[in-house]
Amino acid sequence: MTTCASAPFNHARADIILRSADGVEFRVFMLFLSLASPFFETLFHLPQVPDGATDQEMKDDLAVITMSEDSKTLDSFLRFCYPSTLADDPSLENLIDILSVLAAARKYSLDLIEEKVCQALANQNVLETEPIRCFAIARNARLTHETITAARHTLRQPLIPAHFSEIGLITASELLALLTYHKNCGIAVRPLMKDLRWLTESYRNYHNCIWLFGPYYIGSCSCEQVTDNRFSPWGIPTVSWWATYMQELSELLIDRPSGDTEDSSGQDNPNG
Image 1 (cartoon, rainbow, N blue to C red):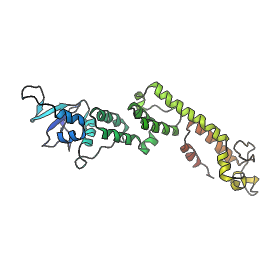
Image 2 (image 1 turned 30 degrees about the vertical axis):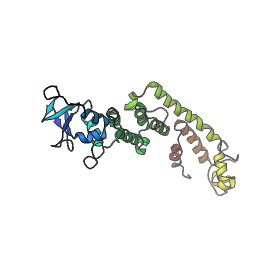
Image 3 (image 1 turned 90 degrees about the vertical axis):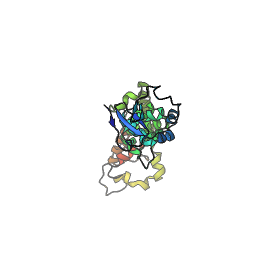
Image 4 (image 1 turned 90 degrees about the horizontal axis):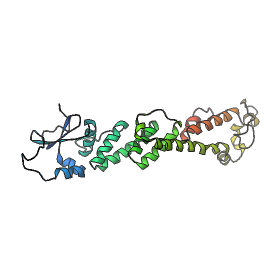
């Protein structure tokens, strides 16, 4: 049983019907598809055979072309083909839809959609919340720049990810490469917690950061001090909250080696 697609793919003056894999018929204009896609331009300009000499299915005097894509994918694909005055570009914020739309774009030679997919995978909101899903989709689609960008954003999350629906899109070796990259970045930040030149170069001398030493420098300060000088650039006992903060931050950065980890950690620091 077939059904008719919604506007604008139900126009009475359409000149061809595209039938989706799930039986939805899209009445469309060949001109729009030909201008958007070299595939359709070639298809529609093939030599026509005489009436009765082909098994071409017809409906309401229009040729019916059976498509392998489902109606949701076909709807998104066709909206990119139509002028914006007739159909808005579809939203590609749902990562589940991106792969099928991208496959259709490549199949029918519509470069514009691939550009839109790349933009969707580079969406900052999506990258911040679903970086490993973006990585899997980009890697599966062989989108190099988007794969690298997504991999960098995974550093904001723990080394071992929770299960995600797109895990089957990448191979075990690709997942291992991502985890190895994450682990190596965690190893790379360890020396930064011991080399405190970023602090000494910023403050020049300890007189400029008296907040770090509490009672040692300010007699009225009631902050506790520690004898552990691992996080003291000048060898002077620091306030305890600083040592605690630096210890916790170093552990967090090993698991999430990203500047965002430091930013979020600093929000919990009453003196940050």
